[in-house]
Amino acid sequence: MTHDNPSPVGALTRRTLLGAAAATGVGALTVGLTDGAAEAATLQGSLPASVDVVVVGGGISGLVAARQVARSGRSSEGSPQLSLFVVPTDSPGLTWQTIEAALVQPEHQFTVFFDDVPVGPEALIGTDGSGLRHVFSGLNPERITAASISNGISLYALDKATAYANERTVWKGVPIGAHQGVAHPLAECYIAVTQARLLAARAAELFDTGGDAAEASNIAKFAAADASLTTLDQAMQTHGGNGLALEYGLSDYWFLARMLKTAPVSREMVLNFVAQRSLGLPASY
Image (cartoon, rainbow, N blue to C red):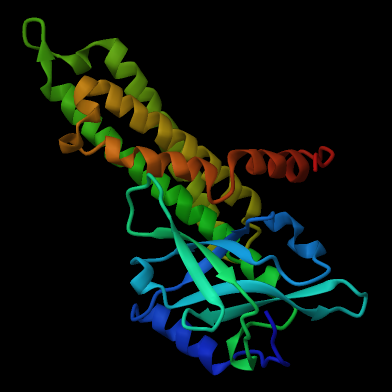
């Protein structure tokens, strides 16, 4: 990617952002370089040719712009400067391939290839050289959003499970929910979900009031992802074989709940953050 002296906010950027706000256009954001996003800060040459992106809404026909971090020069200390750009999908040299996935959701995943794609001043997002800073500014709200999605899955699954446990009867008409083997696991799930919701609410409060929400957002995402996967699994177990039947509306959430345990930010990276930032332990990487 190349560019020439971009201005702080270009016409293309403004048009793209306004379109996103008005729901008249959708876009994509790179979530990781195929050769390792962690290496971006140490780039000495051009960016690798391939990046993975997640598209917000629609399939290929709905992909109108990709937001990409690319090297735009060097700082006075000689380190690479990374900037954030809007790249229309009709740009020369921009191609993409669909990634087939088991997830049942409106968003689709693509591998996008940038082959010497030129970007001009109008494509810059924010300040030249501050691309990673702009991307990182969205990490906390992204994790809070992910926690909220996980908590929604948990509440939905619990509602389904408790309704079924109250209605399903065996052995002289006794509801299966009367048995502790069914009731206690669901009660534990309720406790875990309640804790996760409180953590997410606290993280959102800190972010909205301008506080340091990093620790709270990471912990909320971690707790909510674990709780949702456990709760969904228990809800399916409560339904017995019916838990795998699509008509009961549980099994089709499995891959979404499982994905949220890995992304955005894996549980291992959350544990790294807490160990290093919250507990003051030595960095492991």
